[in-house]
Length: 520
Image 1 (tube, rainbow, N blue to C red):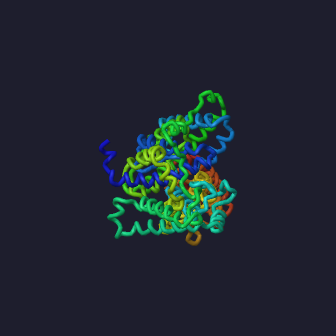
Image 2: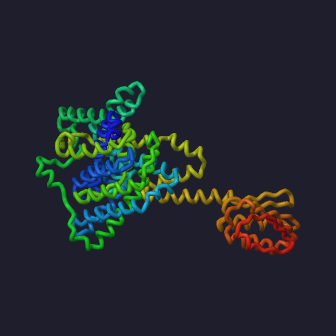
Image 3: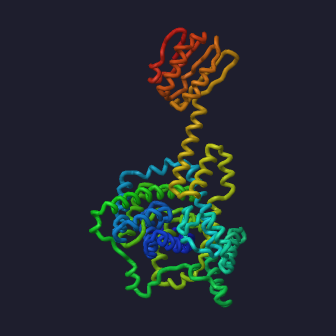
């Protein structure tokens, strides 16, 4: 417990920043999912308090995820009642706990670094493009949407054009000033103030004051209600408890409930493992999160969220990035942000509903820029095309599709780059006049067969060929067949062949006919 409060001076201000960012995201994702608005708040509380307490991650923040919006909306639409969907969330949580005990957390370790960094870059680009309309006061799409094709039938780029045609001067003023203040807050001469007051918190306070002052100019220059946070208001404890909905267990025999629960468990687990991997790379202290414990924590968080009427939760990059950028150092920030969500609904919903969304959009735009700085592209370009191409493809794929699809595409490209690199370096062919050397290195698979056949077929008459297999760890039977065929027909072109082979067991299939010389 003492260790939890070790970095209170850093974690408490950071938790306020994460809370301010998480609040409209929770509401927006609930709206986009077709669920009650308060279900997003419940998920935010469960992700912050429950997952935060059990998780081994110091900086990850969990809550309702935009990546699950389409799945949740579809599931709610086909369920007999919302209470049946809540049962799916509970089942998903139980399945995730089982995943944790089965040690399925190792899956995240197989994602290449270029794809993980591409995922962060993709989220950064999406944050900038998606939040610019909110920064300008155009709020037709729900706050926190990450899909390329939006619920209002626009896409990420056309939404920008629409926002230019519907500029809101007061929102734009607040948004631009907020961005400028955040940039200024990172300057060295403000480092002492920054220790006690994070830039995003200062932005929200100043933006709220500006919004209230704009009302003095009359209705024409004040922000519209849809340009402000829209938190459900509970007038008393009875109305607050009325926001909670509970699953109905009689729907346990419904097949759709189980299919939805398992689907959510699989996707939420994968998003969590990828999110945790990404957050660990952002962590200045380079701490490593125990992934199996994280799956158990997420599972318990989802069970609690579903039992109280909330949406499914995952580890989410946007809030986690805001947490890192705000200077958090331990999980106290995550837990406190969940408590703040709870207290805000009870105590100050009216005050929070005066916060301009353009100020929160500015915070996310700056957060997005920090995730996709131009220097990141330069860094990966210098590492080589086998790293740069998967990195860029992942960013573009996430932008044009969704998080999981983009990652799968990025991994496919990374795998192709790996195979291509191995293909090019596994078989080497050189010659000096009429003497040829074909050397096998590493693992030689059937993918190397076309290159090997081309090399051997290009050997002219009366040549000498040395096939060196000494350095190969594995040689595919298809490759052995190609070598055998060359050996058997070499005498037709008066080619003398010498083979240096290792003790690899697969090489016992090599033919041993004259005039071939076999050496070990």
